[in-house]
Image (cartoon, rainbow, N blue to C red; front, top):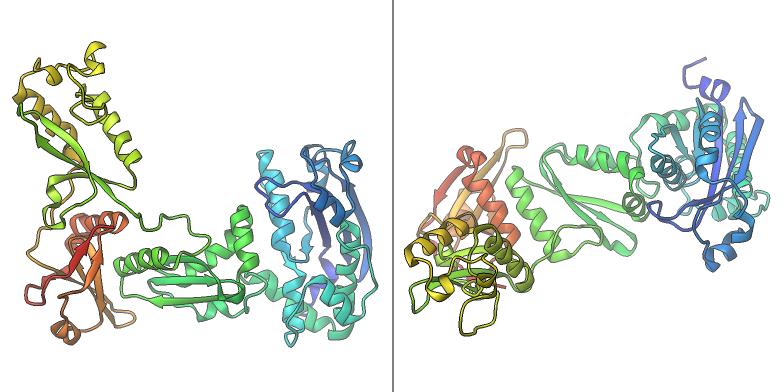
Length: 483
């Protein structure tokens, strides 16, 4: 007998189903747990309980499950049954239909108690897909209908457990123990993959840098990410998605993965940023393009004191004259307030008070040294202002025109030539022939805060020393616009 054949003979399978107050395990809670234990073809025990979710059950969920607030009012809370549940599931294979949902909720409940829960997980949706690959639908209602399984009380824990076990027994009888052993063994050994994706998805993914995209039903874009190893990063999504409700929702929605390879990490970072802003995937948290960037400009007033003003029209060729890039006027004013308080600068000169005669309000409180009424030496005040704002000064583009940044991947023999100007990514080419024919005249590029930060760090930081860069003076300048 092979090692695989022993799974059905020696392992205890805990067929588990839960009912909950909703679909988000970060704030929804469990209302019922049902488990039936199976070993060597026999049911060897069961365990079930209602659970007080410590929150209200909505009318919709009450109608769906039949579990009311009154029914769980005197039921134990999860903390009261956690120890017994952990003991019941010890050394078993955790089996559930769409196991990401049930396993994710169980882990979340233990996590609220400061405890870790882990188990070998078998998803019967994935088992059905593997054994009955010719069928499109594998939800529980479809399995009951297709295989002629006994009708059960759906959306109650033990009813769904009964349906799940009926499918398991039916598949075992129809496909035979060897096929079941092989399928179960492979599902337990391979990386966790969302049930609606083909099992070969990780085999197809490249092991190099690039950008990957997750798509849902109707090809809706769910997520864009980047990595220096696409296959490894995508696999980490699948192995970690039980730890957050966001990950569970994304995995349940996932239908397709595609990718774009790059030669290096900078190209991947720039492509990821561009696609997040242009394509607006549903699950990305990173900021999208700001509609109106705001910066700070310093200029001397009639008395020679440096005065701050907010500007929206930034001239890209003189970035060094501006301080900070902010997504809104409110963010810029918050930064100014912090600088004023930390350095005893004048709120009136920083534009934080309306224009008026006399000193600023902070002067009356002793928090301004008197630049607003001529009480502080102008040279000393201006020096203090320059020191206070130094860290916010934008970096002026240090080259005469665009530069070509070369990234080469020896493993894939791929070369990307990233054309960058004024900290903006203008184009990606793949050989020097394309570079010779490139003209940027008339091309429009939007100045972007995230791109600015990313490219400054890449080109001026420590990693920039290892990058091959070539100045491009003869190809014309693109028009850089401020959003």
